Length: 402
Image 1 (cartoon, rainbow, N blue to C red):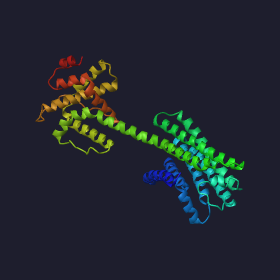
Image 2: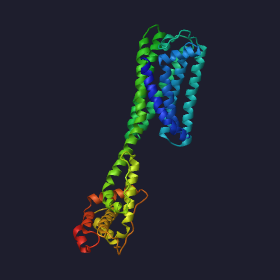
Image 3: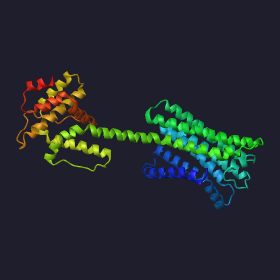
Image 4: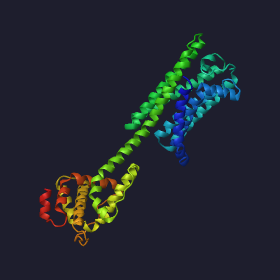
């Protein structure tokens, strides 16, 4: 693999980190957010310093041949640790348990990094090897142990991540399960990476030479594993955003019939406000709900409690549940009030049995959506619309809603 093959994933992770940094500064105490940023940071640094051009530059800058090797091994161990801490915080649980597990992973891999640095200092690596350090120094005292140590640590992380992701995936569904399975697949690729490296090292111990496995095959496996794992981490977040956007736009669309029913009332009252079509979906929904509330406020003198009571009884008779019957009754009262107001341009009429405004709970969009769907679908509301809410008799109303 050449330099760009390392720098492209490093740049991708750095961009993702830059996008996350403002959120991290606002919520520094969030352990999950800190874990995500630590993962992106260590992953980007691994690819950056593992690139042969960067390794050579670092060796020359510090003046120690192969100083980049223990640095990359430590960064790789830190990346493994950050993955374990992220999955621990992501899964959640009692805070004290999560903190204890995170500290154990950090302590274990921190000790491994200290051992890597110590073993490199004790060893002797005078000849610079930018791509085949592992196999070239496979028989060198202390360096041999350092190489095996980082490979074992990387393998342990891969196996542990697979076990945790698979076990968690069996308990969840949807985007999260898909993301966990992809993460597990990515770390499953890390095991062959370490195995290939170990095979090349052990072959050197036995006097053979399969250095190409370590020099050329292993980096490809590492890149594939990192790319797949990154996709797994991103998929649940992206899927959740897509799902939230879909839900928001669905709510916006379902509010359409009620919003259009009240459009003439808002126009008369001068409340018809427009926002740009490129505004965020949530803002569009909020604006539509506000328009609906303004329209119903203008209709208040025309709300007829008798119309609502009749419509409720008819909906219950037709088999609707209490919540749906209330939505049908409110929708019938609203549509009758719209026509009553249209027939009274001078605003002289006041209903003899003025009703309260339609009941809207804390989750107002659900009640409004029910009313809006009833406007389009309910025969009771269709009858109330034809009846006009003012001049028709009770018998005529019942006749049309049977």
